Figure 1: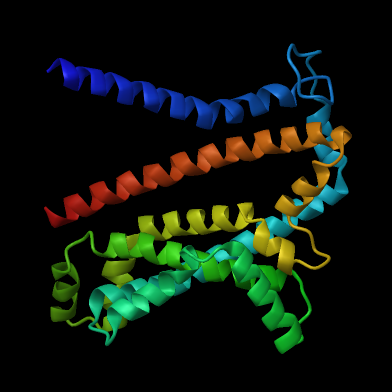
Figure 2: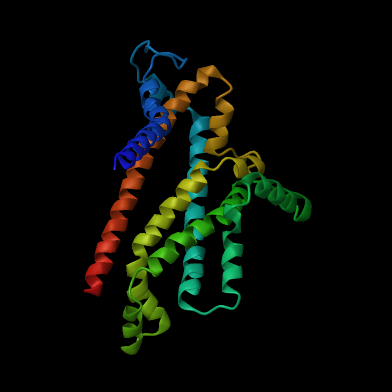
Amino acid sequence: METIRKHLNLLSLFAVLYLAFLYVPVLLLPLFSFNDNIYITLPLKGFTFKWYQNLMVNSSLQAALWSSVKVGIGVSIASTFLGLLAARAMTRYRIPFRRSIYALIMLPLVIPYMVIGVSTLVILRRGLDIDLSLWTVGASHVLITVPLAMLVLMARMEGFDRSLEEASRDLGDTAWASFRRVTLPLVMPGIVSSLLLCFITSFDEYLLAFFLAGSDATLPIFIFSSLRFPSKIPDVLALGSLILMVSIVLVVFAEWLRRRGVAGSDSSVI
């Protein structure tokens, strides 16, 4: 019994140290964003809002932010739509070579992004002679986010009673009407979670955008290029603090939707 307690204490200590290593630097980000100094040092020199004010007049940063938002919205919608179709096919129909198709769709999750970026760049420029732009960035992001959307939606579709769909069909609904009236409302929390997950993945992605953006810089490219200049680091810290707050809100909202969806499906079964 004493040995078990020692192991539990060690595991608890390891968990605390791991969480501290993971989140303490993130929590320090907002602190240094209010520091009246271009250098990240303690103690703080003073308190200021000027770095946040600089964000309002930095046209290059705003253009990069808007580019990432546009790409993220388009990618999240396209990936969720394709993931919904794939999840529907995988969970409701008997498809030949189902496991092979599933593995093929999931393959981008294990291939290094650098390999995907270089190969996509060669195909687009050498093979198809397509100019690099935000469209090429979005296409590459769809490649890596469709598997994520499919995983989220498959878990959601397998989590509710299929007899509800069968009852809808028995009452005279067509396949499309049954999907629209029964399936879609039940999987809506999964769809929203997929939209948020795909958007965040696209918004944060750097390597593929670096290879395929051309002259249209996304926000990660802008941030990495700004880190070379100490005078621009405070602006990046302020921007990172704002993104951190928005990300927390989105995560909380997604979790609230997920729990509401689970409670709704349980009540519908009852």
